[in-house]
Length: 242
Image 1 (cartoon, one colour):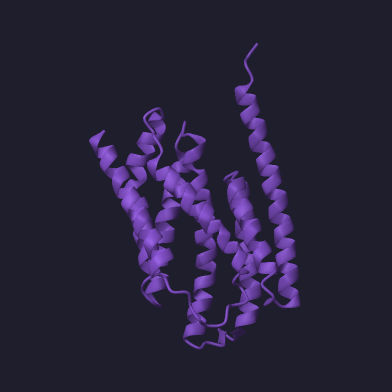
Image 2 (spheres, one colour):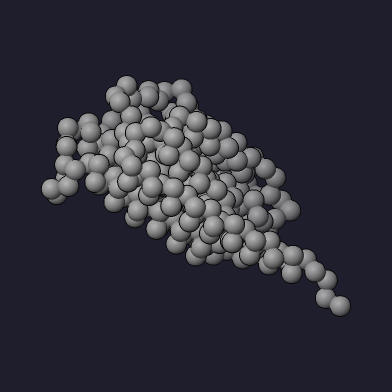
């Protein structure tokens, strides 16, 4: 129990570090926003992210043996994720990309461990679904920011605008596969929010706007199907056997 308490305290302290790094110490770049960056209202998801992670860090788990086992298993990775994320907000490129990638990989490991763990409570995965969706968007945007910072107008003979269109298509495909394969409707909802902000950022080309609309509709359909499927499974589990 003392080990669990110590790990939970470490999780909470690493969460506070990210909160300070991202909210207090982080300075928003003054350069013109990129086409692949969503409108500012999308940042509202950060309130959801920080709130759910805070609840995850401090909520009681004595009544959930599976959750206690998971916390013992993932706490080290959680601290690495948060430290990498917080540090990436303080340093500049290219170390920002390195630290953000380390944080993202460890977050993927956390999600995988939670996904494969039996008898977990529903609350164990939902905060990390939001976290993983938000981190995926940051990983998508960050290389374009670095290309701009180093004054690259094209890469491998392709313009930044064309790369943006390609990455929007690839990213949408990844979101669809991930949401369907993991039956994660929370991840899909966050991505719908991102695509909505992307459409209203007033920086996309006509082609990119259509890619965004098609991606939004496709993700919305998959999210609804996954949600209904999970609700059906939950209802069947709750139905008493006659």
